[in-house]
Image (cartoon, rainbow, N blue to C red; front, side, top):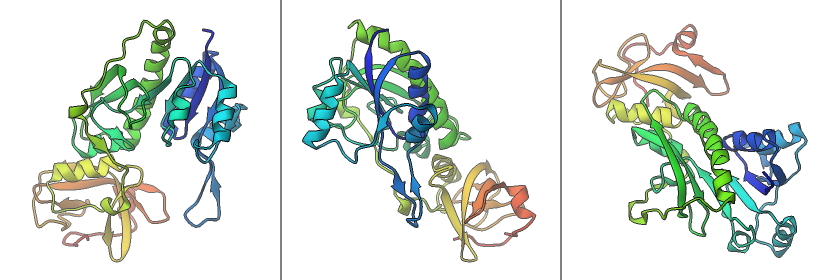
Length: 306
């Protein structure tokens, strides 16, 4: 297919789409990604997953800190793309860019729009206890995730699925859906349908202040919280002044006082029923199964978590 493409992406979620475009010999003129970020301690510069992918595969890329300057508009105009594919890029595309690509900017969004517009749709869907999740192929407009939708595909979401697992699954599904849609987009036989804006909900970025586990909630709510934040940023509790991330858990029918440990298998009481921890991570350590963890650190029956 003779199509000049600019790709914009940053996170792991973006990689399957770019990989598929390259594998299927599409003409990717340029890749845009976010600039490298300093680590928390400022000692290390971390390139984005897309930048690492491009370096590994000798793909041209640029990483401007923002797209708002006249110079960036000139660079983009010179590329003269037919279409721009945007997947988890992490920047708002300015109006000055949107009018340049002949076929527009096409975005893969990890939700069933208009539900969960915004930065953290997969995490919010899991944390909310949604039973269905999916991806949407949409045309980008100025307002966040508000453009018309070409196609959506949904799958079941069960309580045992973590954010990391679902992100990987939806990234592959989104890549396939986009590639299968490109032919119709180019032929102008695609029908983009306006979203029902009155039904929109928003998936705001996860704030570190909301990651602590609240054992006073019902067990199903606690489980959704844990799995929606696993593996990152991670839902956590504190015991003996040490913080522990819980990465996988399941509901138990044991009952007791909220936040108390009910047995020797890391079963923690909630408002109703309880949560049995299956995988966790100590600060500065690798993730462990509960059985591995209990060979060393003991959080015994009757302990209280905060």
